[in-house]
Image (cartoon, rainbow, N blue to C red; front, top):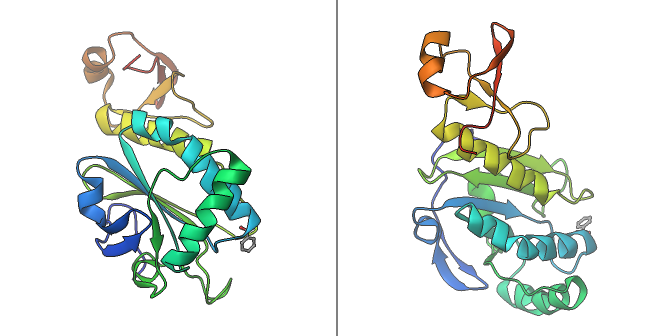
Length: 211
Ligand code: BEZ
């Protein structure tokens, strides 16, 4: 059955560009991003992998460990890494899974046969420190992802895990948030000492509590 939000991220042990790794051990107490790309030596994937490498300090800041995947073998990954460095100006700095036997792709349902029955689509899984899946996004092969959006969602996920808030449309870290309807006005007084603006009884806007 397909994975859903709240499921435990399936564990696996695989060959990667950083050697054999067990996924849950690799994550440790960190959050995680597991993402697939369709194929080595392809243009969009080359730009994506370069961007994820450039954003590593941003993932580190959020205590997030990243792992990439395609069904190409390890020798292909190792050969391609040089192209990423040459064209994107950054060395690969996170492990890439060589999933030629499709163990992980099948576990995470990353091959969508009606799109392509041999290659992984562009899947993204964000996994919490509790190993539960917090976000699943799927892009087609033809569309490169926006990894700033992945960071933005992680900011929201980490904030809403700690505080009784939700983040509104197009929210970015530092902007006002919404008090969840389950919190009464009485309880909100203690939880949100900066106060709030009630646009409607169910739409209460408050400054981001951890800023
Ligand atoms: C790419 O990364 O450029 C790509 C990969 C597979 C299909 C289409 C584009």
